[in-house]
Image (cartoon, rainbow, N blue to C red; front, side, top):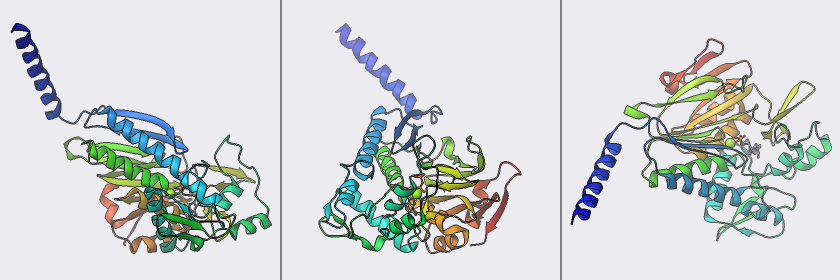
Length: 350
Ligand code: ADP
Ligand code: MG
């Protein structure tokens, strides 16, 4: 009897403890995890829950996405599509088909600025970042032209029964500009399913903020300063429940004769895109949109990029020029802070 009573009162005590735990303000010390996945550093931080299994489920899903969508993994669905190029269609997982459908859509609306069949040119330039055996010189023009011919999203076919086909041999699908965005959306979904509503998902600069900070305050996300890659910010963005994705010329590049050659290739020139931009960030509800659009807009530049954004709903762009001018839309005026006087801010009326 006594033992029962002790056990009973212990249970009550634990229940009261956990009740207090739930009722208190959001704990500011997050439950966090850092991993190297999808070719980048991943940080997951959960603020309103201490559910380790949520983090594990998220990491497992990221590994699964990488295993299916990486063009560097031979056994991935993308690896198979590429090997079967010009030979036969490949049946892929639902999620791979879904991402390729969106990839094709973004290729269409951006006129090929976002180009999912960019693979042959990406391989040729092989710009992987420092110390990864990348090339130190510019490819020959005839090689560039030969590879340009193998790049065309119109020859990427989505067939019935989850089948995908690249029409010509030598073509190569590369989902590097969209897969992390999809992955961020998936991590958000998994965390939400575990009852988590306050978290920061950072997949190498591809960020999703879930909900808000304690007391309904927005999160403050630093927009990377392209001219200072030591983690300094060019601006701070206040956001709730949004994706913020950045593409820039400072992540992976090599320098040749004083010029920077980065990893986002313009299919129309065969060269790393070259315009007035140093970086562009996209604020959106879905990270898959933000990822594809940040890549597309980095190629398109401020003017054409703004025109494309104006055709879409609930997507905002922050453009950072090589001259350190930051252009934001009027709708972000109250939520974007320039912390130092160095950069110049202009507000786009659209
Ligand atoms: P990051 O992956 O560094 O965050 P992005 O999302 O902009 O940057 O994607 C760049 C990657 O996308 C490249 O490493 C390459 O695999 C691929 N890529 C390069 N150029 C293009 C392009 N024009 N369209 C689509 N994908 C591209
Ligand atoms: Mg991208």
